[in-house]
Image: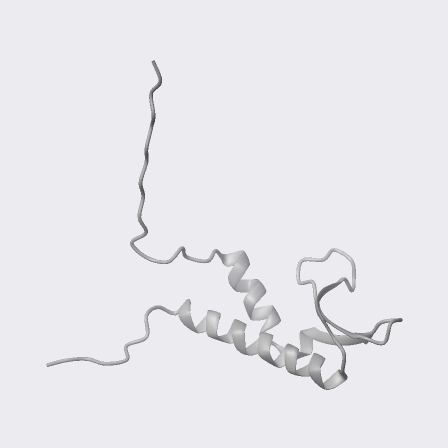
Amino acid sequence: MTYFYYKTSSWNSQPQPNEKQINLWNHVAKKSNWRIVQLPNGYYQTEYLDPESKEKEKWIDVTRRETLEGAESSIDGSIEHYQKKLEYTKGPKVVKTFK
């Protein structure tokens, strides 16, 4: 005889980020923690400084772009993305109330 076990679950809210994630988001939301390097193939790579590195400077590669402008706009987009994530850690944003 075979028994089947079914389990369902639901989320009451989004999973909450932990302190480590929030610290990373704060770190990568600052442009001073980013850099662009040119690779031997001519592409540009965006990197951010690892906040948990025991070494003095350890960089984490993120994207590769064909142009310097594309790489910089990629960094700007990443910063905007993480700033939005940080905004939502403050709780729900009230957009309309009713009387």
